[in-house]
Image 1 (cartoon, rainbow, N blue to C red):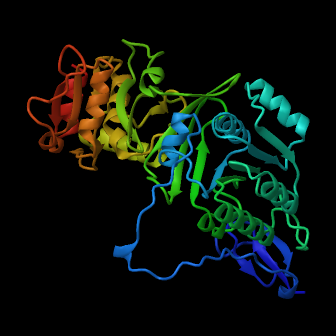
Image 2: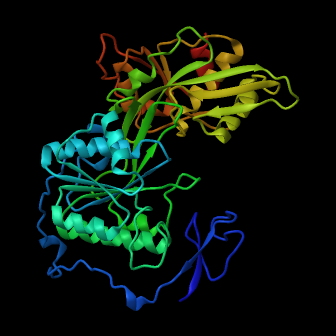
Image 3: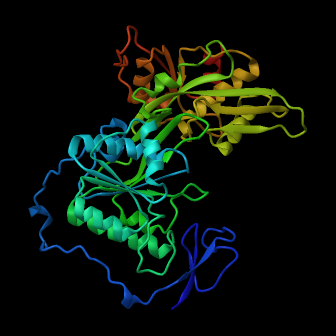
Length: 457
């Protein structure tokens, strides 16, 4: 029996133990794995009688998608759950993965029939306690507490459920493999067994996966290649909002996101996130600017907050929450050089209200305006939205999907919108946006100096 060593972070393989992984640079992440003789285990292979066909002659068959009853979830899946698909969902511990799937399976079982939820990390009583808290009580939702993949497949073949959840894939194991649950071999073989059942029985299966400290799914990358859809459930535990996004989807777009709010009775869909995120905005206060960011194809209005204060130390502090720190440092340097604002002896703190993470360059202009507003202690017009990427020479560069962002701003009653001058050609004149009683006034700017004059006058 051969002994090999695998990195728990990236799956790098070595014939000897290494202190530092050559693949990802992590320390003390190698674990010992013993390879079983290949003759002791046989793969179950999904067989088909199909013959090669010309692509022009292949007939398309529309497969009815199963609706989970959660519109935000269905949107990320591409319109619903495809029969026979395998979906891997990952996220930080305690973020709400099990809660999300319990609620979705409760709705699914009430509409389509029996659903099997297998838990390898909680007992039946613990799962029942969670279900009571979030109001899950469908008589067709069956719970199985087991870590055996053989027992799981046995009940899947016996009950023939409409959908299955395995919580989590790192907890289950095959008894004929001499490896611990969560090891590289166990993960691959357990996933292959469930993949075979999903395709052969036309049953959609959800796999909950652990993530590493780096935020990526634990285990080999081949696990993500094997499944049909990979979802990430993201958010900060200190905040109530959660974002579900797809990084791989064979049956739909990866540009959609679902937004949820964690409440005492479970996860609630956020159908108008822009309005909720701006509800507690303090108007007439300096250091605040509204911008429109895109989460997939959905525009969100968020508040960028800045606080500039005299530094008590020789080296001023720079802090960001929900924004790219390196990008913020770059923009502060542009403000000093191109706009003449003295920030060298000031502490600067930047934040995205609501706990969201925004990393697209389209929020650069709003960051610039928020910092300048706090420095000069002048409030920005509460009815103004600022969009645009800022270059090193202080130019405001074009961004994508400007009409979509402007439409969202007008829907919530904003009156003025600063956009890059290069994006004016994307709009018809006058702007055909009539959500409110008055049209929103769109102003093109080419330099940050122009934007500062318009926003802080």
